[in-house]
Picture (cartoon, rainbow, N blue to C red):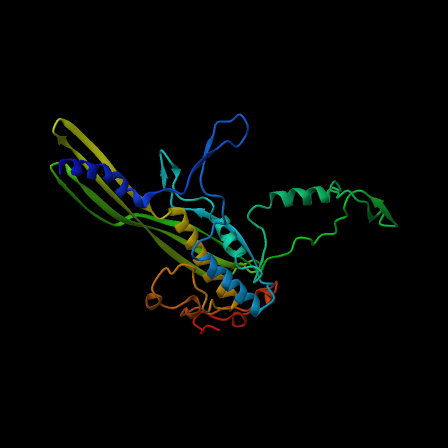
Length: 333
């Protein structure tokens, strides 16, 4: 019996870590002469449970129009100010990049314009204006007096190559609330036992969609996402005859914090795009159910108090009349 008990203790680490097994790993020599490195999974598309919903909405949006609604993204900053001495900034600084990816999943239902980092385009337009930019071919261009054209190695520029956007999305990551709820239990008898802990935190974002020509804010949205995790541990620390046994095993799992930020941004972007296009998400669903169907109160197409505005392609350069774009409080289309 004693031997069986000791054998059972040896199995504790393997049983406790069964749910924390990493992907299959192997050691490979990548470059001749290098030491082997550990490799696991291959690079894959960074999809979230909401990616399928965004793609579905993009198809639905394209079916209702021609994809000419043009949207850009401004700066989506981290306003939480949360930082660690060991890890640095705790919240991703790439909120705008995540928003662009969310919009990209809706193409060809809409058109995306770059406004977040235009440094390369600005440099080339500057070269173009100075007649320094070419493409390796000769071009016809008027001479300095505006008379007959001449063949030149630089590309002539007459302006108007940069197209305007209809709307842009801007905002920030505004909340990180630690330990919204936590709990656990611990039991040890003669220094043999275990413990477990669960905890929940959340992140929040605030975004808005703005008319590029009028600077009118058409809609705002605040989205929060809870992040949960758990930790379990089993340990033995005691003497068996003349042997001292010190066995520890455990597992720890937490929903990725930055994934929660990405999903909140995806949900917010989907909400805002529906407002300006007038097309609801319909029956588009996440690839992984996030809540029970009877708990999901009101899809974005059923928002109360917010109506979609006119199609983006019809936005004039002058400020439109309020009645042309729909007022808050009208029913959804």
